[in-house]
Length: 483
Image (cartoon, rainbow, N blue to C red; front, side):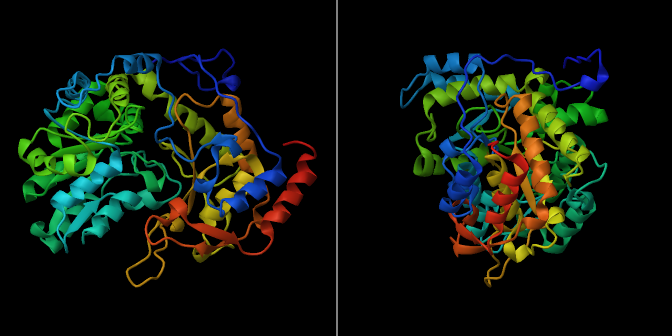
């Protein structure tokens, strides 16, 4: 990875190692219109229309900018239903990058989770993981399984100096397997770049220790590699054992160690689609029949073939530190800017995006009034920037109907790769600072329409009181005619 220092250290900023060749016009609505659009969306940022969003920071899934080589590769796609050369090229790329022999296609990461749950989780069994992801947990509980989270204690502390906050608590993992009995554990899942605790990485050493414990107990080890790209960057820059390893060395080590790896190519590979890979043919055969049933024929698995070509190129580009470093560097810059402003952030900066600690910013808003969701709506009103709630609203209710309060109430400001300029990142930071300075104006939300599953995607809420109108009044007072 190139190191480029500025002559004037005080002017040091992340330096993009790419140039922009295609642009898309953005629109920033007046603040009064942003309030109206938020109301029309039921105070759910997922229900905003993109035409009403200035900077879309709700996710980095499927919205990263592809490289010129990816776009070029899409032109040679072979759309044959069976025996497709596109499929063969993707298999070759996966083998080169991960060193794995067997591949099953799926249309995206949660489709892989569905197949894994259907195949390996029996009613009453437990799945152990460093931390859950929303769709992963939903698939497991849907088939009668349960999730136990075993992330280390520091992983749930908003700010500390732990470089790998996504690590498993190894003693707790061993004790949990002993207490439950190995036969009652469906599998152990490691999530690289642990999403719901701030995109925090897992060390290679920790992954290897978990896999070893699984092997000793006859339990399946599964790696969710969707956020592996950022995790690889942190391994290379923070972990001693990885400093002399190439990215490919690390990937091959994981491919050789884990029983199964799956990923969403909307994140890993900057394309569309998903994959389940392994060096164990028996596991692949157990899952194979579900692909035509749920996804599509084994040569495409629900993916559009041009996306498969882009995925093959994108996976190979993941081996290039110049490419995988851009996201973490921009995220670090945004976190540092907000930290200087005094805004409570999840630190150290992880991957995926900058995570604002809504629970600390809005202590006057109880869990039951969804502080992270309220802060996300306030931020859109103030900025036109769409972030995502990652707190209690993203949880699912307990079986008895009571709320399961999140460990952390966060607003995620995802940083899609190679999409935003540094001036836009600075604008984002400026508006977060304004919202923070006016945090006492922000109130809570209550349900208007609450779906029973994955409610954060399409549920609708209402503000409690007129706090949003007061926020708009304060915005006009401070910014005048400015958008």
